[in-house]
Structures are given as structure tokens and as C-alpha cells.
Amino acid sequence: MGTPRIGLTCDLDPDRGRIILRESYCQAILAAGGLPLLLPVVAPEAAPGYLALIQGLVLTGGGDIAPSFFGAGATAVLHKVLPQRDAFELALTRAALAVGKPILAICRGIQVLNVAAGGDLYQDIPSEIAGALNHDQEQPRHQPFHPIAIIPGTRLAGLLGPEAMVNSLHHQAVRRLGVGLRVAATAPDGVIEGLEGQGQNLVVGVQWHPEDLYTGDGRQKALFEYFVEMATE
Image (cartoon, rainbow, N blue to C red; front, side, top):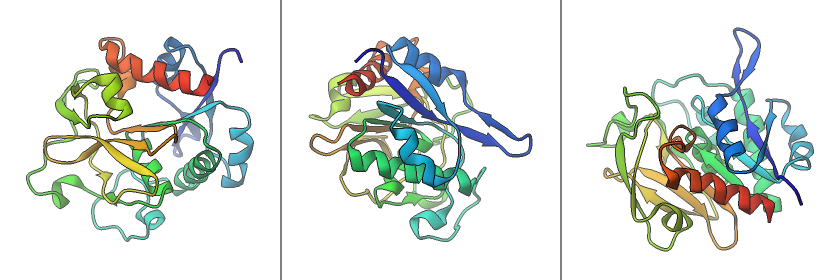
């Protein structure tokens, strides 16, 4: 089959008219043996055409999802809400789930994945979860910040073991699970840090940023290698 083509969703900088993506996503995919292809935000109707070009989909980080996409009104201060990005990525994710395309969902991406599957989100962890950890670290993003516990028997447990240290750059989180997803990892405060597809559904979502940790943590690199292998198969 050759080198698998991995599609990576992109963020927007509307004020400057630019499509943007952190280089570390592409470097992590290249290091794992994949060929990264950037997927700019376009009309949702274009999603099937993109899926025909790629063997795997990475949902990348970014701002908050507009609550209207999971049937809610805004109950907290939201950051960098871009409904056009939300609409495109939700259409892309639903199409990928429908055809069984492998998905790796990172930070905002795990939230997009959950909403696409019919779940919803905590709009603001500090105001909605009593006693929650600080999930928005001030340290550099390549430094691990808090531990996670990984559920035995999950794909993540096979890759990372029973626990790991991860970075943390979010104020929203998965609340009610979407259809076909199961919890794979949690933070000490109970916040969901990992999701997986049930059965043979080749979907993995993580709330942290492994693309900023993989050079110093072989287990994080193994996550990308596993995903690229799924896409190859």
C-alpha cells in the first residue's frame, strides 16, 4: 500500500486570512511513517472528497466548539469559537466514522469526536467540576503536567501502560459519551482523558498533546506509530 496518507485538520486565523497548523503534528506523523496532508476548512459537503484521499484522519487541537453543535447554549466564557471549523470537522468525523476510517483525535479533537458521535461537553472545567485539577498548564507544552490512569484492556493501556504523565492545555472536556465510544483514560479528578471506539472501530482520542511529547517519551511516539499502522492496514 505504500506510505499511508494521513489527513490533519487545520485551524483558522480569520483576522489574517490564514489556515494554520502547528508543525509538531506533521513531524509526529512523519516520524511514525505516515505522510501528512493538511485539510483546510471548507464547506462540510467537501468532507467525503477529502476522505477519499487519505487512509487516516487526525483531528487536531484548537479553540472551543460552539455549544449549539451539541444542543446547548453558552454557559461559560468560550475561546476562539469558529463555527465554520466546527461544521466542517463534525461532517468530516461523522463521514470517517461511517466508513470505518481510522481516527486519532487530539485535545479539541477528542471533543469533536465525542460531539460527532452524539455526546456533549463540559464547557468549562473549573466552573462545572468541583475540585477539578488545573487542566491549563502554564509550563511549556512539551513538559508533562499531571498523571492519568489508563483503563486495563484498552488500546491505550497496551501502548502506554496503566498510567502516564501528560501535558494539559484545555478548559473543556468530554461529558456524556457519544455512541460507540468508551472511556480509556481519566485524570485524578475524573475528567476523561482518553476515548476509544468500541469493538473493531479504529478510533482513539486523547485530551493531551502527544505531538509535543513524542520526542521525549517513546510511549507517546508509539501512539502515532500505532495509528499509522492502523491506517496502513
